[in-house]
Amino acid sequence: MNTPSSLEELIKALRCLPGVGPKSAQRMAYHLLQRDRQGALHLARSLDQAVSSVRHCSKCNNFSEEDVCPMCRSQRRETDMLCVVEMPADLLMMEQAQCYRGMYFVLMGRLSPLDGLGAKDLPLERLLKRARELSCEVILATNFTIEGEATAHYLATLLRAQGLKVSRIARGLPVGGELEHVDSGTLAQAVLERRTVTE
Image 1: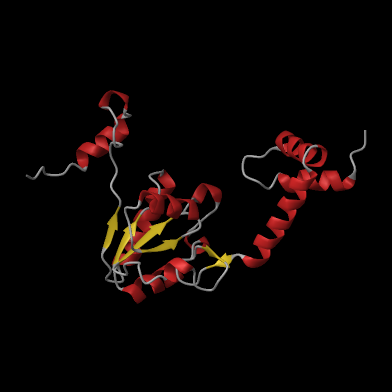
Image 2: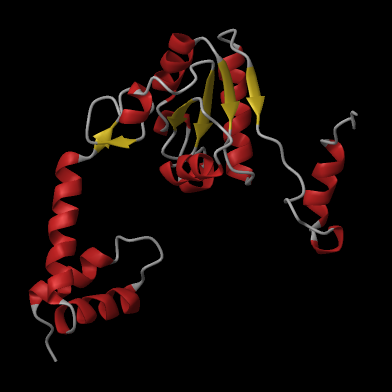
């Protein structure tokens, strides 16, 4: 059976999504065309709109429809701290936790030599410019993966060379976690990063 060329194109296009293989792309395409044509049209319009209007904020590098995003323009944000995260989803988690009111910089990635991603693939000049503008403490909040740790180490060296104060978010036991259910790496890190108990 010959598949219509436009359907083949749709299946091929859906494969650009992370974690979507040929079978998943085929199922999605069939579902959209057979059961949810209105949803397919809405998806197409939304995708077209986002691609044409969303860009990077010139200050924090997060996605924005304006040159400077509302968060960077806000007078309520503290300007004595700059938190560096890997992706917009990490920024959203920080905001949902309501534990931080400073400024952000989104790398839109991390160092990953195995994936061919090096320092040249990150907006490091923009990060340095932003950190110098604010002249503040830079908090490295990259993930605790091998790539995230390598990125944090590289950034710390780069930022300290500019005379900036650099800190790293702490690791350890999750709130409400029980020792018997924690992996040995997390437990070891919690012991290494222990704090003095004060009254």
